[in-house]
Image 1: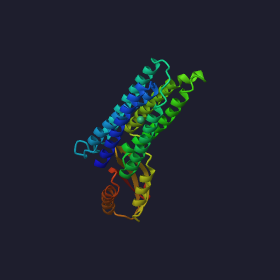
Image 2: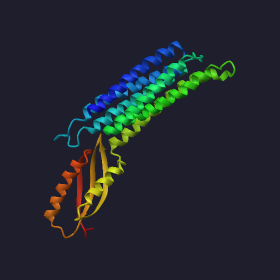
Image 3: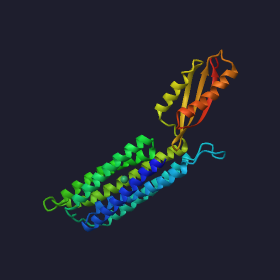
Image 4: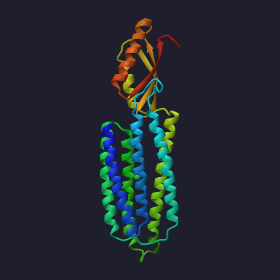
Length: 288
Ligand SMILES: [Zn+2]
């Protein structure tokens, strides 16, 4: 978990750099879309800080009172973040509509190019760490960073085209349009988070078919087990509650079956670290 925290700290430092640079440059160079991009950075920063607190809290081990661990705390934290981001997005949208169209300074191109590059490199780094440490927080952070780098890329065009407002008069509205687009992206990202976390809190069936298939193949190595059915994965933060049914060969004794069941429960948890709890139903071939 410490490695995940370190990666989040890198993301926090990068975000602070981008926020300060974009908001200051946006004010000096008269670009509402760049200021919006900077405010978007504030929402990313808050997400990182909440993720840091959330991951600290949700990594507490399971105990007697909370047998499934604290993984869902992660979802609650993320849900609050999502709601907050939606609010920021609407706030941004409202402020853009209060502005009058101005032509941004051409030197902003340099600032935007730097923030695009930094965002792109940071996103790749977070994706690399996310895959390495199997952290969903980092992976979703990295995906969001990619969208941010892309929106910086579009901002480049906004600034460049705005310079030709004397030739094409409606180009002078491009900066405002850019601000609106960035606000809409922020609102969309916020709603996406809320939707995702809501599903996990309710207990949506997890589509990690890779893990389900591995567990199934592992169980079927035992020759006394004929079938594994109805594997359900329910997510608790970064761990899973796994529910399934196994069908024993009908010649096996009840005692032997019970021993195998205990062995399976222990060995699956040991082999697949992301499995937190196992609930399994035993059948004997010939049962209905
Ligand atoms: Zn972002």
